Amino acid sequence: MKRSILTKTYLRLGVGLLAIAAVVGACSSTGGSTTAATATQGVAGATATPVAVSTSAPVADATSAPVAGSATVMAQTAGGQTILVAGSNGMTVYTFTSDAVGSGKSACSGGCLVKWPALTVAAGAAPSAGPGVKGTLGTITRADDSSLQVTYNGLPLYFYAGDKAAGDTNGSYPNWNLVKP
Image 1 (cartoon, rainbow, N blue to C red):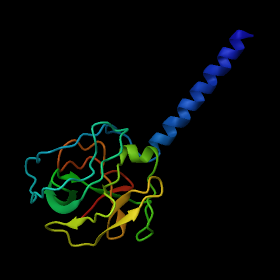
Image 2 (image 1 turned 90 degrees about the horizontal axis):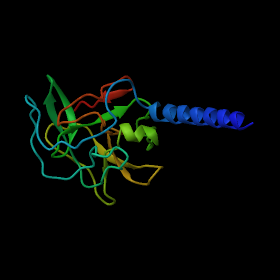
Image 3 (image 1 turned 120 degrees about the vertical axis):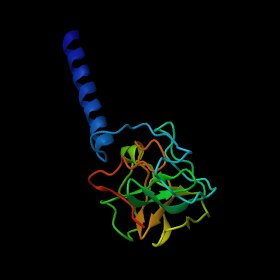
Image 4 (image 1 turned 90 degrees about the vertical axis):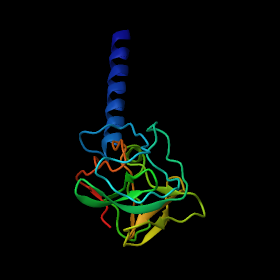
């Protein structure tokens, strides 16, 4: 009798862990680390005009939400291509193909946000366009926590937790795109 109860308990625990793993992995692809780090220095070969602002960037503890501030988005050359990065830390920003242009909504929530933290600004703040940015910046109010997420040409912007240094582009996965000016 006791053995049967233990077997059922372990089976339920295993099924529960598999379900959690499926939710966390839903917005991710293979490879990369889920631990984020905030970079404060440039990458060799990358060029950008530094702007002294604070941004919400990936944080050292991947379970913590990014801290909102003011965000300047600017163009930077990295790896032979021009991409958009956020703020003085130069972390690359991405868009998610499941987000609809101009919908005012983000399709990334829950476990997805652990791997793909949203670029946010503080309430009442607005993102600003730095050098090389040709599109339109705006914000949407996130449904999950009411924070203001920065948008570019109507699409929400995200960081990738696997990017460790300014200008890294490790988050260029299927369904996740580097943002071009």
